[in-house]
Length: 53
Image (cartoon, rainbow, N blue to C red):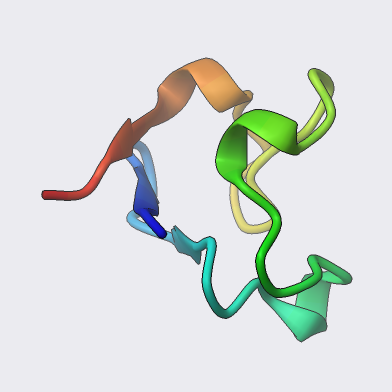
């Protein structure tokens, strides 16, 4: 599973953990999030996220 970081505010989406605070279930890949998903902290779209190495 991967982690994705918002390049604007630094919020991290961990596919393994999800984020229950934002109703994101564990095990859901970033690619499977809806196309209109936005960062829950700053509101930018999926195109502003990068895979964390």
